[in-house]
Length: 486
Ligand code: ADP
Image (cartoon, rainbow, N blue to C red; front, side, top):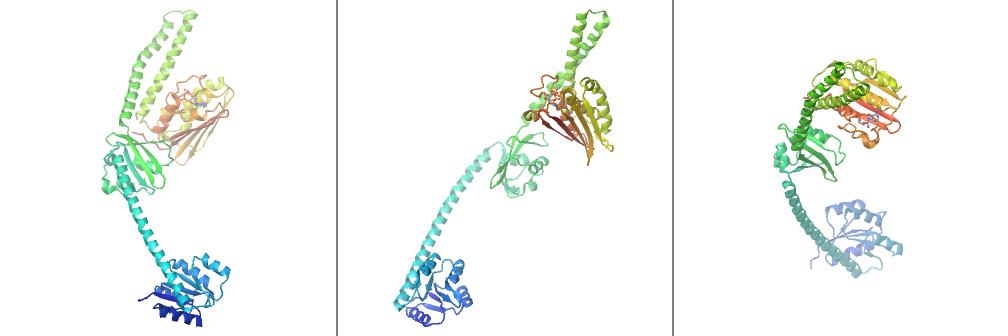
């Protein structure tokens, strides 16, 4: 039978080498001899031997070291070690390398051929097993791929039938998946959009701002996306580990419309209430002029006037808030905030004196003018400084600072009053919100809502830093050159 397998011999020149060569050739193996490590490497590269027989010592090197190195490059090649003397530590080293065969004197032709044949058979069996394993794994992978393909199409059907807008992006903002609702909202073609970077196919400033913003995965963090046809969406961005992000958006146009109608009703009602109230104020003033009053009557009249004054302030606040929020605040002129601050302080002098508050001001000498609505800025200062005084204890301290930085003016109002609990801080700028512990002080909860809407209308920012028992600092940053929002 023809045996054409090539056995490579890496043995130093000796009678053993000759004996091996002869024995193998006699049973039709091809043999090749490597003279040194260099030629060993070359022969391995050029021909593919079926087995490599290495001497324990070869060309001045440790044969086991050579095998260890070659195993890295040819992991499936069967190796045989030839040693002149079998020692337990050597055998354990051979086995540790994962080699199962060695030859040692006394050598007989049969032993040599028998061992080589046994090694090759084993190698073929391992080869067969390997092929079978590869086959099995591939089939199971194919099966798995089929399952995940089914899952994918199931998921796609679900996402496609959702009314909300859904878009999945990878970490670099490439679109992986889009549902029809999303395509309709942004006028996209699903087929041509998949795989593209989102900014290439969607040209919407609100969406870009959202993608550029922080992805804090706060489930309550929604972004409003406005469309030219008046539609408004509430969008959210969620992290999907190892994939990227999911952008979901829900149409909230109907909610916005409800909000608008509510605001309009409040505005109309406040407006309609204001005129009869003006008559009430007028007539109460006339009563005292119409004739003399006794003490009780004067007291009752005073109470009526205070009550009416309170309602008038509330209605004025509501009307202000309504018109600022509706974008009607379009007056802009260059104003000096330090000048407005002076008027505000004059108005608050009575309260400052009666509560013995120490007020310190720190105003930059080079404070630039800001382009703003002076009436609204006055309202802003009255409210923030008014609160600092109102909520301070008697003999409290209030510090007011006006500084310029870059193209902005920064107002800071600090008091050493009661402070604002952390859970209240997130809500104090909401309409009608009053701190839980503030019922001793009069107020409607509209002051800071008005301040916030003024700041927003001037493209500014407002925030509070406060520690209960130590005091509060309100910060307002206004751009020097703001423009009307609408
Ligand atoms: P109002 O003063 O009419 O209650 P605001 O909108 O001006 O309404 O303020 C809302 C809430 O914020 C107040 O009820 C109070 O709890 C809190 N607050 C505002 N300013 C201060 C301050 N300087 N110190 C402590 N609490 C404050």
